[in-house]
Image (cartoon, rainbow, N blue to C red; front, side):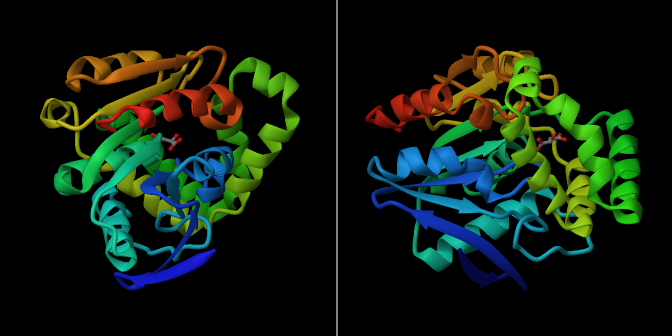
Amino acid sequence: MSVARVRGIELAYEVAGAGSPIVLLHGFPFNRTLWREQVESLGGHHHRVITVDLRGHGETTATREPATMEVMAEDVAALLDELGIARVVIGGLSMGGYVALAFTRLFPERVRALLLADTRPQADTGEARLAREETATRALGEGMQTIADAMLPKLFAPSTQAERPEVVARVREMILNTNPQGAASALRGMAVREDHTKFLREINCPALIIVGSLDQITPPADAELMRREIRGSRLEVIAGAGHVSNVERPAEFNRALENFLREPEA
Ligand code: MLT
């Protein structure tokens, strides 16, 4: 693990492999180890894979103010400056996808290609915002156990839940290891995130969209919307995966991602 001191925080990250750079951003409330299988696979295939603990997650400093998607995107840009990297393939799962979209809007010249996994472009509804604030208050008052209990049943496909206890345990562990202040700030940041639906038409880099066919949190309809609106984009639906499709079905996820990265324009 390495640490970059940027923008008043310590940002934890890891670099594996050598070649063209790809940055992978985890969902909420996980950390960079979410990408273990992708690091193993891509790191051996001509890629320099950079995984980051987003603000308030993993080993990166938590801050009290809302960690907006723009703040997190600017953290990533500052890390790339530190590493002397101008352009990257940027990818994110769920909240990481919100950050990847914000990064693409803020720094289009830095994005060679985009991966949007199990995510959505829309902003929160009023009801979702209220629920975020309740969850933030609960995280701060009761800790992450209650957040894990509430989230876990929605994260996976039924078969993962029933047959892959090691996957469920690994994701639970990530949630329990998240700093409650970091989780609360991210929830408050997600609650005020921009609606990126209209922005999708302005994206002019290659884009791959991946979704688990059984994703209950950001369902395939959201992925279809992104595919329709992002010119030239491609959609891969991973049969039998839920919201954490990269962990539930790593072989299928990696195959889709590697095929995309092999294309000359990506
Ligand atoms: C995530 O997996 O990052 C979150 O479930 C996204 C969200 O709550 O909108």
